[in-house]
Image 1 (tube, rainbow, N blue to C red):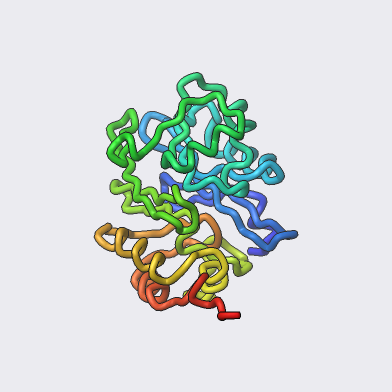
Image 2: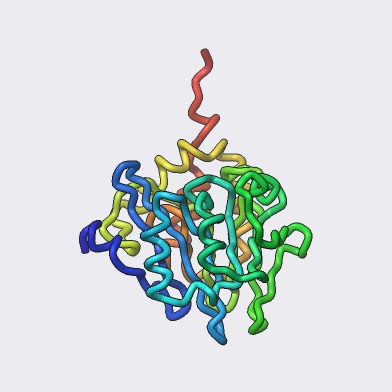
Length: 248
């Protein structure tokens, strides 16, 4: 499938998770908003994206589910490619009970987006959120990877980790499942945006106890099966950020 074709349709990753993202041709940055469809038609929207990509992302959302069914938006951190379109998205969803979920260090910065929805700080709610069906989303704080309030979301029911910028890639791909350059496809992103290997290792350690079947990063392809252990091993030894800076 070509990159042009990839941008045209939502992609079912499982029966419950859908990729509704895009490939930014000008920036070479593939961004990955995701939808979780839970029992009873309730949906959770992860990292909805920026203003320029809003028409593509929302068209794909509408192909999967009526926006009114989205009860919750989870924001992994505050970067504009992750949540720049939040004010427009909440207008389309048009629910008084819509919740925007994130770490308080992220939500504090959301005040600058002029949002009207309720803000749900995970660090004030035991790093968990229970959906109407009883399904529980668990949140893992990943400080400085690469934001103070960066988080990952773990859906234990499907053993799916939505990892935000951790495990992300800048490499172009023909499919959300294309990892031909893996694991080195992750190098450039982490070496550019993550502050150091020591902080990277700390974040990886917090995820190691999880029983993960697939990783859905905010940029790049899905990581699954044997690739998960390879990804952890590769990033543990990857110098990045300050590790690569030379003394003047």
